Image 1 (cartoon, rainbow, N blue to C red):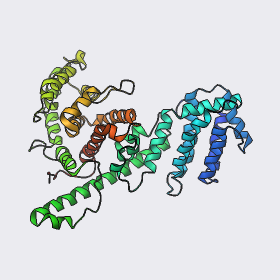
Image 2 (cartoon, helix red, strand yellow):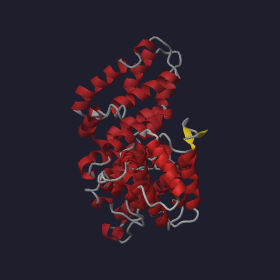
Image 3 (cartoon, helix red, strand yellow):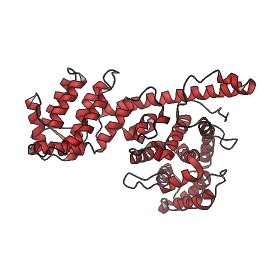
Image 4 (cartoon, helix red, strand yellow):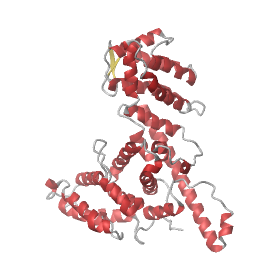
Length: 432
């Protein structure tokens, strides 16, 4: 096979591969989605009967060339997104994205029964099977869930559904859950645009719902509860939190957390007191004082967590203790704290400290602790989002009621990030 060009991911695109891309790019302009899906079924799943012989031969050459599964995953991912990039903007066509996913999901039992087929068809089946287990395919399934999110869906009746169906609710996870290493620039831009739209809608819904609930509470105090009930909310609660939980979260993340200061006030005060000429050791002592929950009456915090946190800080970049504090050391410290408090990596998914925190102080206070870190070093916000993407991916096949603690945390984080980094001001909030 002839190598034709190097793509943006530093891998050669061979001539046969480019032929398939060009073919799909031309067909997507002509064929209806159902026709294209049937074409993909014949070409990639059945492995025979494809009407364009040259394209069938090109794929066969790729398969018998002992293509690595990683390279084949890239090819399949790109083929899928050639279609998706054309379909996703059309309300009539975007439902075909789910049918495309269904094609591959339903291919698995078919592929396991191809023992009587030719060697090349069996090799193709093995490659397709590996693709359905790949990170690219999982990201594709999450993307389909976001694109085809129902306009009206009572998530509270979906508790037996897997966690992955909730991905549309959390725009801050999109970059890490909907993209893979080989996502094209155009696809990255598309995800960024969808993320901004979803985030803005959540902020508007949250602001409108909150304002209306406050009006109802005011009416109930001035007139009667019955009078207030005559004015139902124009929109539903945009979170999966109860009203009490939502307003507790809003008061925590946007209001005066200690009766005087917001989290942002506390972060600005800490940064103002941090001197460039102080040692890193001194900074870590001050960081410990800033981060530990003072007003929380919890034996777990006093007797266990604070000690673990202090030891973790002492072991954070200890060879720099006598150096002057710097922005670089701040960034590394905050990164390592998020590793410690949430989760380190997909390869090391242990999150015992995180589970202990939620169990002992609840999801709102746990998110508040993380928010304090991000507010003194905003550059770690994407890093925090990535930690939660790791947890989401780790539990995505579990039922929602099986990981309800994580759902509560994800909902609280949505509120925390929206009120502190979004475009709405809810600092006037007090619990109704």
